[in-house]
Image 1 (spheres, helix red, strand yellow):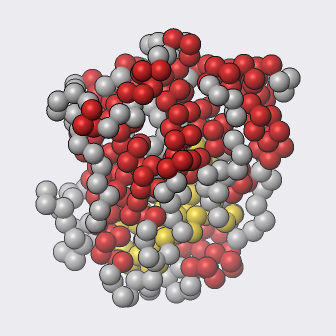
Image 2: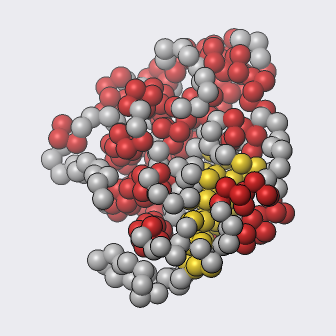
Length: 367
């Protein structure tokens, strides 16, 4: 199904006029291809709407039994949201990012409650928004090329797209470790953290993709999967679980620095390079997500946090340093964990009705 297919439900703004999402059907499968390979398929607002519309159409189509999502090119499924656009919007005091996040998080919830198998081919880079369009699916496939991460603290942001929900449910404190450091994991660790379900070597992906048109999804994956690589983080659980169970970000860093493990000291150094505000808000978000439980409730929390971050210094500065100027030298404010006030952390979780006039309205996940 092409983007301009008249059978595809449309947003009120009209049909998309680019090929950033390719849709087609074959046999009993509906295929979604994110098609911005030069940008590692980074998500734009029209792409989010197109994927959501395809899910709505195919879920009520009796001829479609399975939905498959993949990324164009060789670099990855999706590197996340279009953060240059977020940077420009935040600098200009705009609201386009709020509208984008609202629809993106609705898509994440939509994927999670899809009644048909949703097969995500998590090959290559799968970060941020890429996790959101894959890891909430029912059949999540990684390869030896997979690099899965929620790297938001490195740009002055906080894991979103349901990422805090996923990481909060990971074994022990592994999710907290990945959330604060923003580091990527390979296939074995993605399986350990329950971010993925199956390992399929990349040279079998084409055959798997084709077979999904005619074979039941579970059977198709069974035919093509292989033994997964070792989970590297498993050997580090002893210090990860101890250090990240500390009450504060400062104490976590202190435990990591003093526990005697080289990898732990490196983790501490990494955290200290991230936005101090983002680190503290992320830690609070992960712990609140554990208590909230359901994905929808966590997405609503993430929406409040993201909207608050949009007006912060560190988000604009982090994207500038990492993506715009690429000097890799962000000037965080505050510059140290100890200088981040509790009130600033609390601001990110405040209900919208308690914020200034004109603040974004809440996230509705109905429909």
